[in-house]
Amino acid sequence: MAFPTASGYGNLPNGNFSPVIYSQKVQKTFRKTSVVEGITNTDYTGEIANFGDSVRIIKEPQIDVVDYKRGTSLTSQDLSDADFTMVVDQANAFQFQVDDIEEAHSHVNFIDLATDNAAYKLRDAFDQEVLGYLSGWEKDGNGDFVRRSSVSGTKQDTNADNDELLAAQKLDITDFGGSDLGQEAEITSIPVAAGGGSGGVTSPLAILNRMARILDTQNVDTEDRWFVADPVFFELLMDEDSKLINNDFAAGQDAGGILRNGRLGGGLIRGFQVYKSNNLPFVGSGPGVTAADGSETDFGVIVAGHRGAVATAQQIAKTESFRSPDTFADVVRGMNLYGVRCFAARASSPPTTTWRDDGWIGGWLRLAPFLYFLNRKI
Image (tube, rainbow, N blue to C red; front, side, top):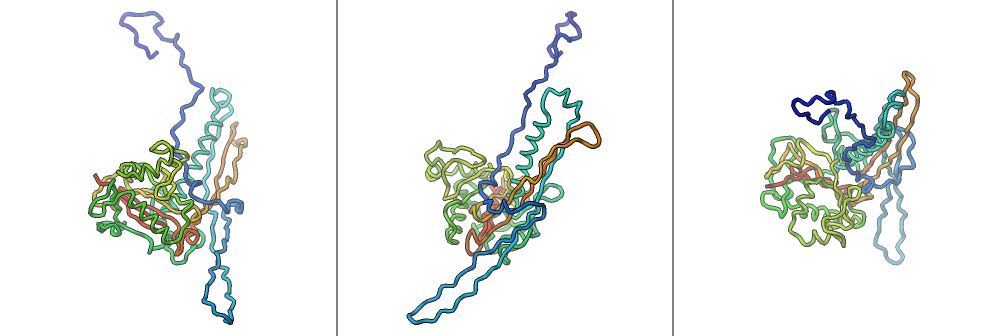
C-alpha cells in the first residue's frame, strides 16, 4: 500500500484492502509527423509488385528549334528515347507474437496496440529514409547519417555525383561570404541567425530567397514547391523581423500557422509550402549546436524542391497473421516495400532536382538539390 500509516496504527497492517488497478487505457508515445507524401509524387506506385523490381522511365525528348525562311528545306530531327531506372530495393519489416495465455489473461488487446505501433514505425522509417535520400545521406550500420556514395538504379543525369546531386549546384558557406574552416573532410555549415550578420552568418529568409531565385532561373514551376526544415530552423525563421513572414505564413489564418501532417499553415513562404520534420539527416549533436563560424562536426540538414522532382513508389507488400509453428501464439508480421528516385530534369534545366540543406547549426548550403547546412549564432 502506497499511502503512509501513522506510527502505532495496526489496523489492516498488510494493506491488502487496497487493490492494484490496471487501467484498460494505454499510454501512447508522442509520434512524429510524416511529410514525404506531401513533397513527392507517386506516379509509379502502381507499377511495382515485388522486391527488386525496377521501373524504366523514358526521358522527354528535347526538340531543336531553328530559324526558318520561306522556301527553306527542313530536316527531321531524330527523337531520343533515353531512359533511367528507379529500382524498388528498399524494404522495412516487423514481426511480433502474443502467446494464447497472455492474450486470454490480458486486460488490453496487445495485438491491436502493437500492430498500430508497427504501422507508425514503418511510416516513420520510410519518411526518414526518403528525406535522407533527398539530401544525399543515408544511415550506416550504427544508425548514424553518412553521405550516400552509391547510386540506386541509374542516374537521371550522368553528370551528377553518386549522391545524385550536381556538383555545380552545391553551395557552401563561401557562397554567403564566409570561410571554410578546413578542419574536417566535411564542408563548413552555414551559420544562421535571424536578421543575418557578418562572416557568413545568414538569415533564414536569405536562404529561402536564394532557393527561390535558383529555382526561378531554372524555370521550375512556382506551384508545388516545398521546403522542409527542423524545429530549430523554424525557431530562427519565426524570429525574423519581417512583415512578409506574417503575410506569407498566416495567409488569412492565425499567425504562427497550423500543423497538419508536418505542413505549416495554408500559405506559402517565399513561394514554398513549408513543412516541419524531425526526420531530416543530422551529424553529431545536430542543429541545436551554436557555432558562430559554422561547424563541420555538428549540423542538421534542411531540404527544399519541387514535388515533380522526386518520385516514390510505395507499397505494403505483405501484412499477415498466422499461428506460430513453435508455440501457442499468434504471429503478426508486415513489410513496407518502396523505391525513390530524383527526377532532376523535371525540376529544372539544367537538372536541379531538390533543395537540401545539409545542415544548419552546423551545415552548409548545397543545391541541386539545394542543400543548406546551417548554424545558429548567439
